[in-house]
Every structure is written in C-alpha cells, then in structure tokens.
Image (cartoon, rainbow, N blue to C red; front, side, top):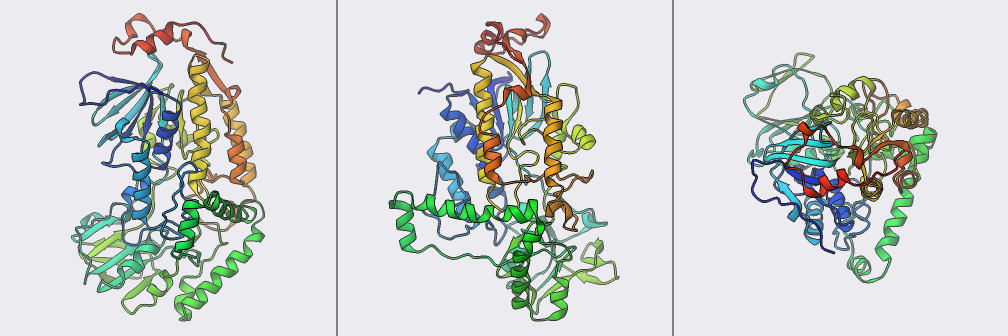
Length: 529
C-alpha cells in the first residue's frame, strides 16, 4: 500500500498540515505510529529527544532495569526471542525499542529535537494548532503519547539551588559526573533509588540514603535465559507466547488483592517481610525499612541487592527529614550536618500534575491543567477528555497498573484510538468530543470500583491519589476487562459534527490547509449523533 507521507524536510515558515499528530515516541507513541501506518493513515510523530524510546531512552542511571518480566514488556506483534534475562536492563529495552522503530521505518515520519511548546484547539479551522521549537503544525487529530513518567519531580527543599556540587535527577543522569570516591546523597527510596543505591555504593566514599517512607520490597526472580529457552522462543511455534501468557495470568491474580479484597495481599506481605528479615540482620535498620502501610498501597518494588547495600559500612539510611541543603551539605531536621559532594534526586515524576497539561488548551480556552485542577485528572477510558475535541491520550487517566505490563494497556488503547481515527474518516466526521455526561458516569463507576482497593485504603500517601483524594492513575480491575472495554471506538459516547458542517467564516480559512482537508470540509454530510 502506498501511504501519504507528510513532508518533514527542513522547517519552513508555513504551518505544516497533518491528519494525525503524535507527541512522543516511547512505547505508546511508537505503537501508535506503527498502527496508523498499518491503517494507511497520514501522521507525524514529534519527539523532543534525538532518538525514540521515551522513558527507556532518558533513564540511563546505574542499575536501571525493568520490574516487569521481559516477555511481558514488549509488543504482542513484535516479541523478542533474544532477551538475555527474565528482567531486562535499560540498555536492552532501549535496543528493543530502536529495533522495532527500524523494522517499521518509524523514523522516516518522526521529527526529532522537536519540543512541543503548546497545543490549542482552533475553533475557526477545527484543528489543533501545535507550536514547537521546530515550527508550527496543524492537525485534525492530536494524540498525546508523552506518558506519566516524562517530567521529573524535584523536591522543594530550602537551599537546594545553592548546592555547589553535582546535583541531578535520576531521569537526567549526568554521566560526566564521576562519583568514585565522593560523598553522595540519594534523596528518595522509590523504584529508581533502590536500583541506584546498590549500583554506586561500592565506588563512592560514603552514601547517605534519605528515606521519607519505607517501601515494600519483594525478591527479584531474575536470571539469565538458558540456551534451550532462547532456541525454543526463536524456533518453536508458540513457545514464547505460551510463556508470556502464563506470566500474564499469574500476575493478573494479584488484581484480586490489589483492587477487590486487600486481605488477599497477605501472602505477598509475608514474602516481603521474610525477604527483609533474611537480608537485614540488624534490628534497628530492619525497623527503619519496615513499611507502616499495607503492601500494594504504594508501588511494590523488587530487588535482591538494595537491602544488602544498606548494610554496607559506607552506607547510612537517614530517616530524619531534610531541613535544608547548604552549598556543601545536607542538614536534617534534628540539626545533623552531613557533608556531601554530590546529590542524586530520585523523587519520581509529575503524574497527576504534569507541566505538559498547562500547554494543551481546549475549545473553551481552558488548559488541561485548569480542568484537572478543578475536577481531578478525569478522562474517558483513559483516552479522551470532555472539552478537548479530536484529542486522544495514550497512558491517560486511570490506565496505570500496579501489577503487570503497561504495554498491554497501551495496545488496548491503540485499538480504541486507531479505531476512532478510522471512524472519523469512514463517517466523514469533522470533530468528535466525549460527552461530559458519559465521562462523568464512567468516572463515577471507576471511583466506586476503587473504593475498596488497597490503593485507596492501605494507609499510605502515594502519587496514585490526587489532591482531591481520588485515585485518577490506576485501573481498578483485570487488564482483560480494559481490553474488552476499548476493543472498539464507541461513537455513541461522543458528540460529533459532520465534516461538511465545519465551514468556518471566510476570513478564518487558512490557504495553507491541504487540498484533502478542504475537500473533506466541503463534501457530503455524515449523520453523527
């Protein structure tokens, strides 16, 4: 099939027209590009980095690895028989992503080094005006595939800007900074921190680990794949898919305890406590790292070497809060001054309050940030938000998981979003916007389903909950339920306008609009609910 290819040669002064614009080229954006290519659609990918990969391109800190089994952490249409381990390191995942991009020739339709500065719905052209560092774009459909882990969250600590040594976020690791023989502070004990600490503890002079809340940590069942397994995955039909299916089903059983009846999390808590006792003999240190909330309330972590790293003579776990940072030291609330040469900030990301929300402005002139600030991060099937026509999200509200691979959820959303794009074309619809009443009803059911979950009742404060106390990040059920829910685009939940009715005032017509788009606007009506 011959596909229409948008010209992405050198940026010119004219606004570049495209049917669908995808922001981001991680697992979500790359998947969207591949699916739209298969559907024969015109699209363009905008990527602020110099390579595809998203989170796995950016997070290159020492020890970076996935906490989801390798066979699950890949596209269903692009299995990788060459995974070296059951849990893959960052470099291997990034290599997989770039390999998929090569296989499907996605770079040809990607603008790299293109940072999106803002996107605004244009009521005169019925398109999205997108302003970027490489020029301006106009798109009929905008797909946000930036994900939840793209904007680092920095701690608001007095004096932190005055620090004279090296300081950087785990997601922006400074590889030019040699930590060998240095006094280092790691702020945070989340998923990134528990990988960084054991990776650098052996080469620094001294390491202070600042903990606000102790996480639950389970054993990491990681090992190298055997030659027999590699051969089976590569040459035995269905072998890798069977392995993947068994891992998927095993992990889905956790949903019962996480989302429906937290009492069933007891076996996992027992395993985590046993893991802690075996790895930390010192009762005082063990007390410090024992969580005071139910397992699963915050993200469950896996590691075999974090606890042992804390027992090293050159590592100190600090549980007193940080009062301030001085040019050469960190001061805790008890008045202790700890001299440091470098600070690693491992404090996670903006999830429910992402700065990217402020730059997306809908039909009423309100930004996503303003809407979410008022109502919470609510959407419809994680893919659409009322007031924002022709805008779709991948890894949107309430699509996060606490137990298995996000790639499964991404592929479910791709089914929905690509079908939406095809529905627009098939029925010659100009704009679609999810009905407010449909979104409200969907979220009412979501929050009711989350009411008894461990995330809402586990006794912790986590980024799963927004400032309104609502869980707007996690999916409250089995992932196959979400797959069924997003199998087809449900036009009945949307308010649509036929393309023929989208004729703007003469003064607002943009001569740069493509012939195809103008033809669409002047063609016959489609009956749209």
